[in-house]
Amino acid sequence: MKLNRRGEGAGELDVYFDPDIPLEERIIFSKFVHENVMKKGQDVVRLRHYVCSHCGAEVGNRNVAMKRLNDWLEDGRGGDTPTMICVACEKRFLLWDDMEHYFASPEAQQKVRDVQKQTEIVIDNESKERTLVGEVISTVALAGQICREINVSDHGIDAEVEFKDDEGKATGEKVYLQLKSGDSYLRERKSDSAQLFTIPKKRHREYWMNQAFPVMLVTRNSEGEVQWMEVRDYLKRVTEDGKKQIRQIEFKGERFDVMAVRGWRHEALGGTT
Image 1 (cartoon, helix red, strand yellow):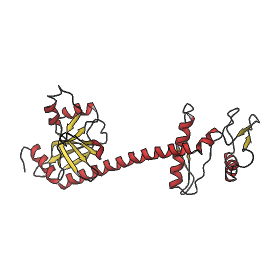
Image 2: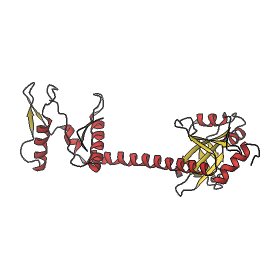
Image 3: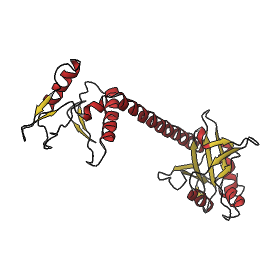
Image 4: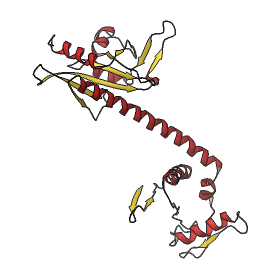
């Protein structure tokens, strides 16, 4: 996609596709973009880059092409299907072609709704993750310690907390945090109602166990309850230093608050108050 600005508050958004992309995928994505622009924009006009179905030459005046098509649609599709003459091969081609027909179909509309729902779920999850990050940073600051977010967290660590000494100086002693927000990360075991956390990726488990500092798994459920559990030493213990393979953690969460952060500091600095 490319956005070309056309003055104050105006612009033109072009959508391009690789020629190998299937027609259906092109239309679904185009309609997805179109529907979202229609929701948020004013005076939105769709202009299609037509090409001749016979020789592939591009239609020069797309405004005329779209006006003929829209007039025909507004007239209830009465009369002959609109066409244009290609200036290259001088043959007529349809403006209401397979692409336009599918673009306007209920099937395409439903698929766009499905994509929108999936997008909303992703955005909602990202919003929840950012909420948790904000709560963690705020709580660590209230505890008088240093919190740094790690931008590249694919390895399984999202932030680190560095502790200060009694004079307020950074000590280099830390804990690492893996942050997870939402109810989908935890499930209840039926036999004893224990909370189970599924480790997202095998490399996360190994990465956590190999850290020089403790790793805290911090979760936030849909009710806003934030809990934590130390997982580096836990994993070393239950896997016998990696000899056993596990995919789940029995999550015994403790409340995450200022006192929890101060408790981490107490442990890290060997009992210093």
